[in-house]
Amino acid sequence: MATAVSQSSSPIPRPRMSRTAIFENVAGYLFISPWIVGFLAFEFGPLIAAGYLGLTRYDILSPPNFIGLANYDKMFTRDPLFWKSMYVTAIYSLSTVFLGVIFGVALAVLLNQKVRGMSLYRTIYYLPAVVSGVAVAYMWIWVFTPEAGIVNYALSLIGITGPNWLFSTTWTLPAFVVMSLWAVGGGMVLYLAGLQGVPTQLYEAASLDGAGRWAAFWNVTLPMISPVIFFNFVIGIIGSFQVFTNSFVITNGGPANSTLFFVLYLYRHAFENFKMGYAAALGMILFLVIMMLTIISFRLSNRLVFYEGRVT
Image (tube, rainbow, N blue to C red; front, side, top):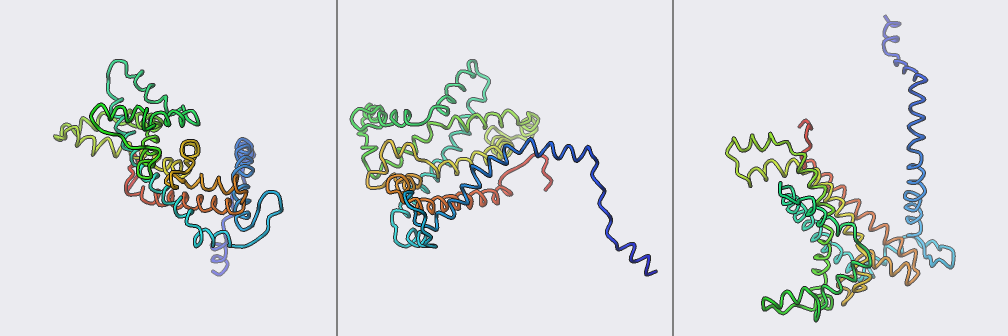
């Protein structure tokens, strides 16, 4: 009896992998090895280096001097511009992400209609998404110039005196939010693909149940494209916390630090003041904030995002 028990409780030996399975595993790792090497060399490695440099006083010209958590202590207790830049970036991110989703979905619904010449309209709305950088920033300077800008000119046609957009602490950040909608066509393409993947049978069933257009949109369209909305939402959060070019070129953080975005503040410490240690600490905080917001978004997605075929 004891022998039988001991034999039954002994672990079952794992079957040996066949030569074909071993070859397939080796081939798979070889094919992904360029990505693994690139990730270790250009992402994970610099992340570890930044984590260390954030604990040092480093000015490029001299070796890093380890100072522990002094950079973080200064950041949270004795650096008001850190909190100012985080506040400006948070307001900008909150505004642009939600407006980007709303305008992107609305534009995709409009461009999903069967109208003659729709391919041309889609191309026109998508083109701004592939044009970016300094040239676009200078274009917006011309658009929002108080005296000769086309925005204030258009407002004057209806009897409204436009504000000093880029020279006012009240209106500069809203102007940057409007600028962000310039590239809404990039998300629009993904929403459009999601809309075209919604089965028509669902709309037919909703129509038979007496649902109107708004009810069908709310109960059929939005749930079916919710994975696309979630993807654009997360990418929007990541991108909005890294905005830099427009603020650097147009206002350089002004007026009165009203457009002092976090990455611009990091850039000043790194490449103007040569405080690389402090800049690395700022970069680690940015990484942690983005990671935390991404994790929260994924946790909330379990209740807000519908995945076709998922068993609940």
